[in-house]
Length: 239
Image 1 (cartoon, rainbow, N blue to C red):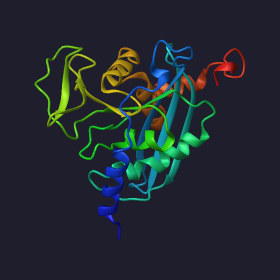
Image 2: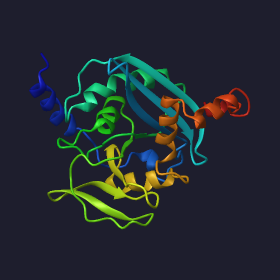
Image 3: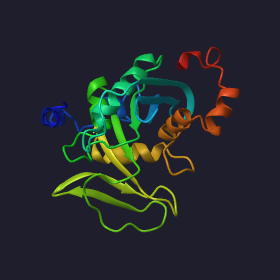
């Protein structure tokens, strides 16, 4: 029997620990600026019996993939609306433990504080590993926003009551918008800025686009595997 009441209480406690101020590394004026940004993606296999997490490490600002890890663990919790992060974080932690290079910032495919109890998977994971995180979701979970223009770059704040949870941003013309919210140790304003800095010519920012490509073995990732960068040579200091 799953004690959902206890899990919701834990969410509320952890949400109170989320920091919505930028970590020092995100300050462009510091002597050691961001060097690596990760993307994280979680999915399920074997009718949900296995949870799969992929983490891609990109060098910043070139956004070149330099490392990836995939972890598969037995799913410990069924799908329960509002409690998805408890189902997803074990696999994320397993992939995180395998990394050689720890990133300065992680973009997670999912919600940050744009969650009814302010603890989406990006916030939950960020707290557990104490790293700055941003939630980059493909759909709205809570909050409301004004109608969005159809043009690329259209932007509206995502609001719940009097609180701004994040942003609704159309990253590409004729594509559905992204729902961007801070996870942990990132401000609402910086969450948008860092996602925008990680864009190429696609709907998704490069870190989560790479994580998805790795998890799904897409052609983008297959090409990288055939011709990876020289991680043990000229890029040795980058891993």
